[in-house]
Image (cartoon, rainbow, N blue to C red; front, side, top):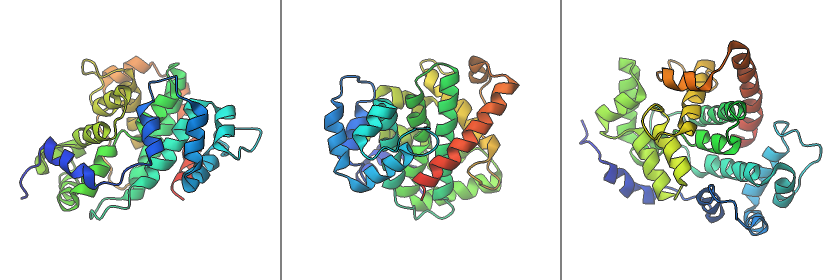
Amino acid sequence: MNPQLSYDDVVRTLEDLPSLPAVVMELLNSIDQDDVDISVLARKVSHDTALTAKTLRLANSSVYGLQVKVTTIQQAITYLGFQSTRNLITAAAVTGCFAESACPGFDHKAFWRHSIASACCAKVLARHMRFNQDYAFTAALLHDIGRLVLAACFPQQYAEVLALRSSRDCQLLEAEREVLGVDHVEAGLALAEHWNFSDTMRLAIGGHHAPEAPGAGFLATIIHVADAMVHALDLAQQPDDLAPPLSNVAWQALRLDEQFCMQLFRETELQFEEISLVLLA
């Protein structure tokens, strides 16, 4: 059995991870600010041709239903709005940032399938609750990013976590704490700190397994329910994936009826297919 890790051990290894393009860091740091100079950011993003191409493919997908084809980041901002375009740039950058992990048993593609599906579901839930859809999409896309950190930085130990979860059929958090001494929520918070995420995003990542905890914030509630629903839909296509327990407090807070849930499932599946085609190509 390996010695247990501490939060500081995780922080120390973050320097070894790939970093996001500088312009994406700027976008993530400014998620709570409205006074960002859009033309400057559009110009900076367009210097990164791969990122621009992926972002524009997303913007032109049927999810956004644009009547015109956008060919520049500035046009995407004009037709979709700044927040939605920032979302797409972030999604395009983050999903391409991590190389496939050398961790045995960690399914990189399934990880992103689950994250993208959670983002699509959270966006629909946020619209229903009249909450900011763009915050919900980005926070849900990144809610489990700590799993990627642990698999990338500690591949052998994380393989033990996955083996334990599988043999014991227990929750992932439980297996992580037993084998590593830290879990993916803490690793996600360490990365959020390292990448200078806004407080809104940090709270959501930190609270998505315990949305009823004091101060967790409403965004954590939306992500928690989206996470559970996506597990139920099995869009990640992972065999024997144990869904995390659903918080009754979070479920009651969203007041969802059966008719809306059916609509939510349909919309999530449609958006997921479109967006994952672009992001995981």
